[in-house]
Image 1: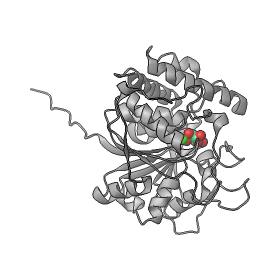
Image 2 (image 1 turned 30 degrees about the vertical axis):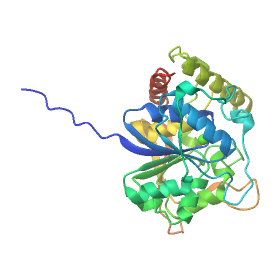
Image 3 (image 1 turned 135 degrees about the vertical axis):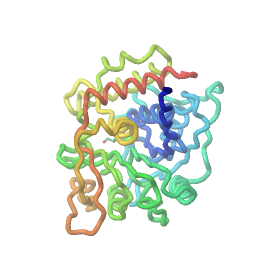
Image 4 (image 1 turned 90 degrees about the vertical axis):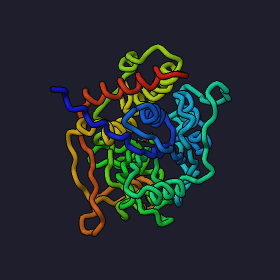
Length: 328
Ligand code: BDR
Ligand code: CA
């Protein structure tokens, strides 16, 4: 008897929100080349670097893997209420470590930059395809909060909204209790948490379970693009050596993408929490998350532990495919 054909799942429609950024870059490469994902668009937000660097890096990274067809929408140039802070010490002067993705390269074609700003771009997708799209946000939540403020139903109108950000028990990487994406725009985090606009969160408690070393990246194929990735990550490793005393780097953003969408089986522990974000003027407190149990806000699923070996193997395999692709 013939075996039943295995039902092929439709690639999952995804919008990635990024502040590219070294680890955002790796998430983009994986999202753009994973067959399980239908990358409908990428929205840019200021964070690790200013918005013009984010937009340029994002477009060029997509073109380098032959994905100039993916629409890129430019979003918030600054947080909702605060002054923008960037992280050149962590991500390099233009966001990609020792590499600068400047300059034209006609062979790579052009990027489809859409004239529609990010918050409206998100709104258009949600309204046109209710319940269909997943949004994975890998930077400050400014674009998502702006969408919510414009009446976009992120809570009910998406398949899922995932955010890399915050910390529960792990020491913060920006303040004692604050994670970078949360600290850049605490008001945006609070606007999203209060309206249930984030369903799933990957805080430092999960993403810092895996340390990627330069030795791990030796497994990548010997291509021009692999060289770019290695040069970017080398900068990130040097930063982590100084800041955290580890001989490697945390790749928060691609770990979140893989754990949330591609290999949820690698998430070994989750908790459900009702969370709020401190928005006080005290810079040591703003951006810290706390439990808001007496509030009637929705609870979200928070990943708190990941199978480190499995995640490392999965990420390196997917990144190898990305940097081994045509044009790389
Ligand atoms: C987060 O902050 C950024 O520096 C990284 O890209 C990641 O999204 C980690 O705290
Ligand atoms: Ca990021």
